[in-house]
Image 1 (cartoon, rainbow over the protein chains, first blue to last red):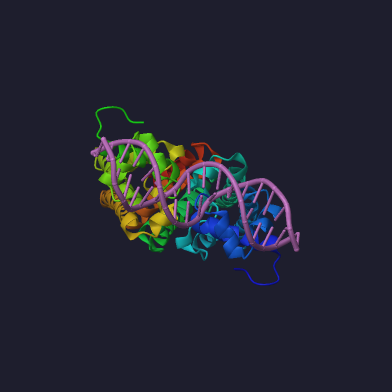
Image 2 (tube, rainbow over the protein chains, first blue to last red; image 1 turned 120 degrees about the vertical axis):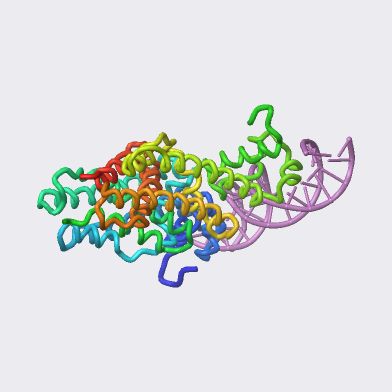
Length: 190
Length: 190
DNA sequence: GTCTATATCGAGATAGAC
DNA sequence: GTCTATCTCGATATAGAC
């Protein structure tokens, strides 16, 4: 239940963001959204065409936030290795998983072109950000000359996304950290 | 709809395995299972206590199969690097994702101790298998002496699990392969 | 063992009053 | 803009006949 100072439509979007993160698209019902937002059904169908439309607004906002966070770290100060390290070690709510990546396991997201598109675009941009940093590191001689920026970027992002899987399976964030430390040891400049 | 020569209870388990893989636990209804198995409700509640009990049987069987597959590759012939490479490059239905790993994104699986346990145990065993191979490689001098087997094992498994995420986001298996190639380049013995 | 009622509740959406 | 019916259908389970 979101407090005052937020419009009904805002509260609906925020409630949906929470629930998509917690329970995914299939696991989130309009009813649950409305209860959390403290709104009636009429409000939802007034502001949005339905569940899909509301989810789209929620996903877009989450994507923006995620890109802002990763961009700040990857385009921030430090050597390429330090920036990748900062990205990997940043504060995360590990057991909640990635609010964007988790959506790829949702059958109704992947089956719906409109819903999958923002997910794809977001992960694609993070990959591109990572690839640029890796290539910079290769140019500066911090990484070995053979490294492929696109490949390593995919490896880094996959390690993060898969780290969430391992952590959630075990019920503890430790596995995420272990995987990240392994990756950092492989990337570490000699 | 599964053909003849299979008992009703078998058909129920197989249908459930398919649907858990495709749609997850939250997204799978008893009704869908029954339709696919060609059985009535009475059969399901005769053989199993309910949806959760049936899912448990399905998950256990999927876990067994997965462990057999990875075990065959990781304990197979070849140098440690070759075995890890074989594991990473094995034939996969990439866009379907990992039938075990995907369950970690299901809120009702993670919230239910009984359902999460087999998922955790399975991924833990794969990690242990991988860790042994990595440590063997370190002992044989194929990998640098500093490498930590547990860490690299987590990195490898996370890259695979995350590779599915990237692939499903983009709707193409390419991203999975790219991430795996990056990891192999980092692991490649000098 | 398997089937067909039947029951209760929620999902998702529409209609129309205020 | 927001609310409360109302609708149709599916989820999940039980009951009891065959």
